[in-house]
Length: 371
Image (cartoon, rainbow, N blue to C red; front, side, top):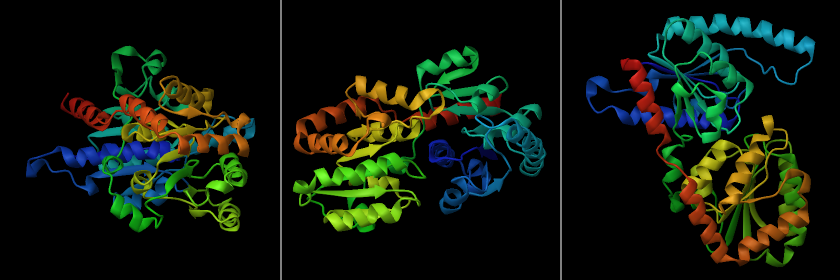
């Protein structure tokens, strides 16, 4: 069996694809049906996060040229359409070479040419929709594919009901496998201290970085009691790192974290954006969280995602336009002081989380292949 998983650009699109790949590897029991990593081919772009992450995961990857269309000037839209035509040609060559049994689009513009070409070649196709409001790429692909795997009930209205399946958003098995000893080996923090894990997506988030730098000034009385693990992105790395050092806080500051499972495992609380994949991970493991939705997300879907969790008591939300150092510091202090509130939030998060989405998506893929 050969499987193509297409898309990426961000971790929010890519990591569900890796979770599905892991489930394919775990699925078959008979030696003759054994799927190996070499049988699962990822397709993305050279400038997306997939170009760095997939080789580390051990899967083969092919590249297409692709760009986003939304928000571009007329001239750039014409260039994007020309690039798209070339991507169709590249997708055809990949399909002819690999001869996959199924093509799964995980979102992002890199998935469009691959999934469309597979559809017109008669290959079974599935797309994953992680958000409550679909983006342009998946709205388009939804008209052609054989099945759509949805995370939120609200998404069904955007697609044909007869081929929409509420599966949840797949998360990697390692996220669920908490190994604190391994984690403290990777991130040498102090076990007895309250640990705050801060990240703003694969490229960081400037507003979160700036607010965190400012917040430290309001937390000086707690610097012997709390510590930080902070993923900044490349741009703000030096500034943020210098601030922790100058103010005397114990903190590990890095541009990017590949070992997210270990980072989660040592965190007492999380400060992050509200992308669907991040929310799927923190609810599956029950991490108390301050969510700061990305204000420019398509159809403001991150705020919708975060508000749903806040209404359930599974997280606290601070809007980006209201984010200031003092506000963030007060929220961190509240979480640190009130252990009972943290435990209640953890229970609410676990009640919302789903851990079987990858299995459901692979079941769906297998049924299409057999059909």
